[in-house]
Image (cartoon, rainbow, N blue to C red):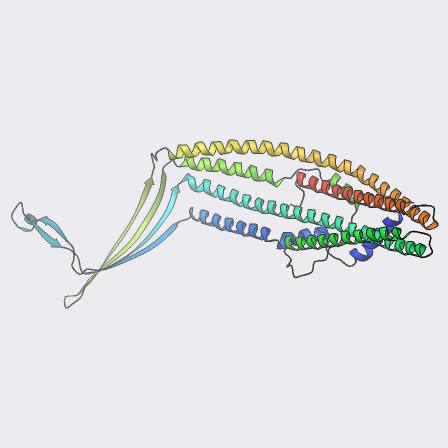
Length: 439
């Protein structure tokens, strides 16, 4: 017999009570979480902010246009002290003269363009790297969300299947109570036998209620992870395809870890920052042109209104020759950070290699454990069924039945643990190889 009676009951219970009544698969739950999870949305907003900052950096390389205006109404026109001899006065004496008119309006248009500034080009490259980092951080957030959804889903699978087992065991116990009660009424068994079965029945019901509460908690956690309001219903399809698990593991061979890519981009960005700091030793040159219009006026009978235009172009050189060795200290700090990133990358590669080996070994072990536990459940179910039949025939004691039932429960729990560990090993393999989500 390939599958025991309980296993057939388990499959039928899942197909009739879960698959058709519920809807979302694990992949659908992950897709929903990647779209609606709040952490993912926050990371995407951060990505948009980085893109906006890049536009701001790029603006520094384009021409800058500034318009300014100034209006003055002199209550008293300011004067200047000049030699009186310039106007026919005695030598060695000075007089105060006021130049200008009381009304002054000036407008100016200035256009400037950086001609040589290494920091602009380096800044543009750094901005693009920052955008890559932001996108990778979003990917990392999505991977974390997908991992948490998967872990919660697998725990829900285990709890749901434990509920199926307990309901099956509960039904068997109820039937056995009826038989034992009938035997007691016919003076073929003792009253304590019925009481012991009822104690077992109560314990099973209590355990079932606890598992049902855990099931609800896991559903609520999936709602939270997938961005589903707690007041809404979330239906989950519970099914396990062991063959698909094995194929999934064998197909995940390439390593595509986001954390390695993050470290690589951080290292490249740090190197650009070093170049940008060194560029501070180099002078910058920019060109500019100015168009200026000044209007002078005076009211009254002798009113005057004069327009004085002015136009000029120029070059501006800026060179910070000494800044108190601040740049040199910053470069030393950036070099130390680069060394740290190199060590972190080496450590990450070793960690990934270890995680992949451990996941693969765990998977192979759990494969064997699953096959062994499945056989144990089949055997335990057979013993339990025979002990029930022998008890009904009066050739076995109730103690033997209860022991057989306890053995069956233990075998069922071992099977579920092996199944959950197998799924966990598959998930650890995907995480180690960087294949939790499509990239």
